[in-house]
Image: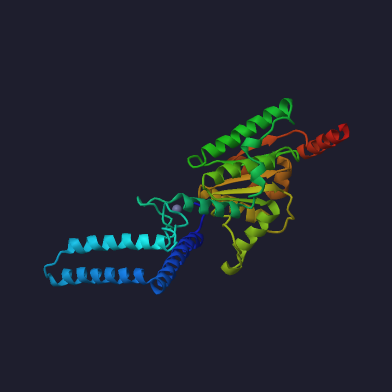
Length: 325
Ligand SMILES: [Zn+2]
């Protein structure tokens, strides 16, 4: 989920390339050994004759001791291995390790399931395309702090955190969209990051955009030709779309219809959307019209977060610490 077929192909091409490089290395090493080590070459020729003999006997049906020939081949391989060590080569000189020994650089385990290295590559890709790789390393559910909130603000923030956790816990089974609104700087974007982090950890695709990036990308993806649409996950398909600070973008004639089309399409497909904004509900209605307003009122869980501007409080705290030194 969240990785398209081109990206999947790219991952598989990477495996294929690694296997080819390993094969090429083995061939090169073997060629060098055969040229430089007479004893090794002699044994190799004997093994090749035996292989040929077994194949001929299989076709002609002539009686011969195939088992003895096979035993001799095993002996030859052992003699060759000893010879390699004597000459100072590593025992795996002709069998160099795979990048991932578990799947032998195929991406698949013996039972046909995906190897963990494949899942890691997929996760890396999901993180790269989420746009918030750096941010979520410091902003996640483990780093939430309640210290700036008091009274009613604290109550609201706790409720919002619980709802965000519930959103993540039930992501795959329950369609839910979140609308985080309230005064600026009190943790709405932080909570969006927490959600992104949790969902990405489940290997589900997430795209996180500021509202300006969102509208720019939507415009490219919806109105331009396929070639001009640009890189990245489609806003209409990505399992989780997060729009941060809705209302901060420059409005244009199609913002309202573009946003409505996007939300409509995503809800129809059962995809999740999280919106955060500093707009009040009245401002939301005024700015985007009744259609968007009633869509959000009717389909999103509304989470009102209030409190001091944490960014300012954090700065004040730093300043007072510095002054007390
Ligand atoms: Zn692997």
